[in-house]
Amino acid sequence: MSRPSVALLGAGHAVPERVRGNDDPVFAGIRRDAAERGVPEHTLFVGNRERRVLAPGESLVGLTALAARRALVRAGTAAGEIDRLYGYLSVSEHLAPNSLFAVHRELGLEEGCMVVPVNTEFTNWVTGAVLAWEAVLAGHAERCLVACGAAWTAAMDYTQGHSVSIGDGAGAAVLGPGDRMVLVDYAADTTSAEYGVMSMAWRPGSGADGPTYAIHPDAGVRAFLTTGMDGPPRLVERLLRRHGLSGSDVSLVAHQASRRLMDHWAERIRPAAYLDTFEQWGNLTLASAPATLSAYWDCIRTPWLVIVGVGIGAHQTALLVRV
Image (tube, rainbow, N blue to C red; front, side, top):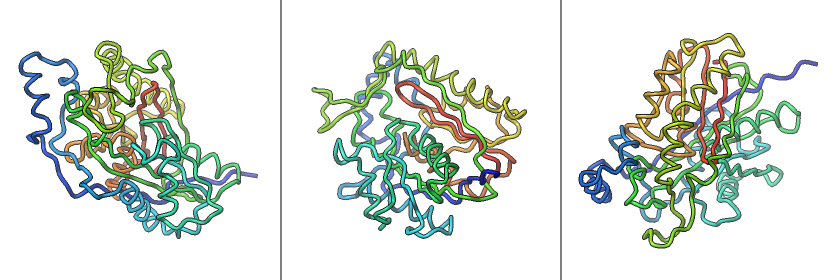
């Protein structure tokens, strides 16, 4: 018996209304330090003009639920048809449970809908899509929703260079049987020797009320310039080679940390189209892939699509989709 084709049935996104430009006073310390001392990390995170920021009183749960509702509408799927909810919200309201359970509540999903938080920053959505795909292929689910929301602007140490690229947002997609946007293959690499060189943790003296993100000034920067720069192109090239494809056959959606990374990946992979929302939304961390997919949903003209996630830990995952 042939296995059903599992497809992306529809995607949705949501970003806050509040815009933070490059001239925002919150970045003043970074600009001053960079000018005085040439902070290396600051030079790695370049290329965005704006980013979106949750305003006081706005909820990451509400933003992620809005993205999910838009995905459901685009997919022509009712909330009651969703068998599983994969994804992650970061930074979650609680250490445990993850706020993905609150998204289940906000959407009014059925009690029998399993919630599966996927804690693989920043590949949460891509990994969740793979898990959902496998669940449908196994016959344990018919339709799955994969939703990720990121509110890292409140978890930044704004003395650190990487904070300039961070924005808030959410993205989601529905997966199920279909004959367009069909999931075909994936590939993943793990470089666990780099465990801990980039991390979200409680850091006394950071000035934040909760955990903050940090990149080790030596090992973390080295990982950015080696694994970060060259790992995703190697992974994508291997995935495409398995199917006799090249970059010219695909549109590319990738992690959006910095234009320096993205330009290097574009040069190495040479996609027919490189789809990104980095200039206006910044680095949405775990929400970049689904939000960008949604933004370009009706504009993909190539026969193939590759979606690449890059994660701290460190790891990369790439998903091949037949458009």
